[in-house]
Image (cartoon, rainbow, N blue to C red; front, side):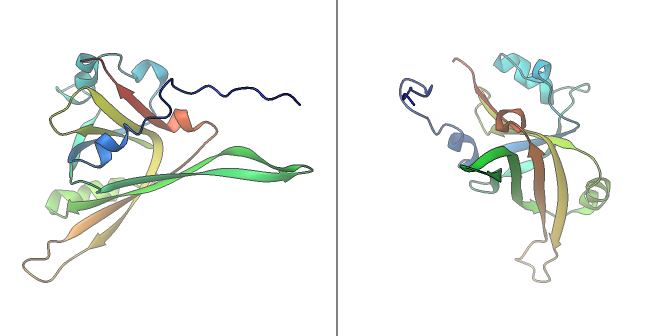
Length: 174
């Protein structure tokens, strides 16, 4: 067997997605999955996804640094020579949303459909990360102390054959 190069960016693999999750960011939600035609090519097209009455994504809340976490695991099956990949399992959580009256109705509607989430760093409309076609379940933590606000934790899960179909990241030119 001859060796061959894998295709990588000229400067290696950048960790730019951390520039979203490690900072304060807005979270938007839409029902359904993101098709290739839905992925914006410009920052103006990105704004159209979440601004205006006809925008498919609606505000879900604002997350503090490190409030969102997404993890993928490649599924495998054994074969004669080892294991081969068969797709990916995605799981994650959104922590730190305050539990308010409107949250109760919103939480009731989750759990049975597929949703897409859009993450936009605060003060930066030139990059985004999205999760497409995930299920969302919730966990509530109702505090009984004045300085301990009640919280909702959203749990995210999904299965995909190709990781790039479920986790979408784009950065637009300045």
